[in-house]
Image 1 (cartoon, one colour):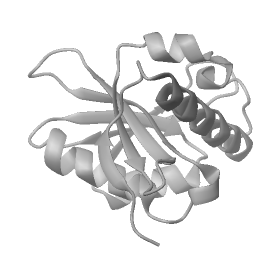
Image 2: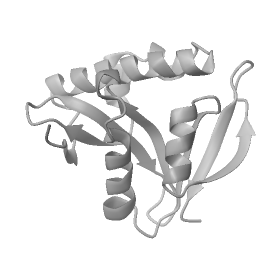
Image 3: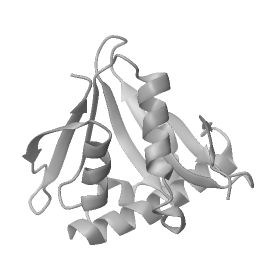
Length: 157
């Protein structure tokens, strides 16, 4: 099976936005099970709310046009850190290197020389392993709300 093609995603396109929203909900449902916390904000986020976020979107797009996964980030200043807001893979495409493909592309092509920050559920072992494998350094864990422990990571610092 050919690898997905990495390209920017335009969430002003209704079909693209709906596909991204569907993949995100499915991926976050799996994470909620992994970490034992179903209050992940993105699980309650509606399509229009997601589209309204000030994020840049990058997708791993299959030859048939399906969204295998996506990465979304924000930059508060041109010389400041890049904050990865979400990295999601369609659960039907787990363990096929989609998250690694997206993250490597972003680090090498988009964020080269920049500090990149991300957080994930501390008990999300696949995500923690991915970030560590790609050279992110784990920082302090934190609890934004009771019952949720998050792991913070930095790359390029």
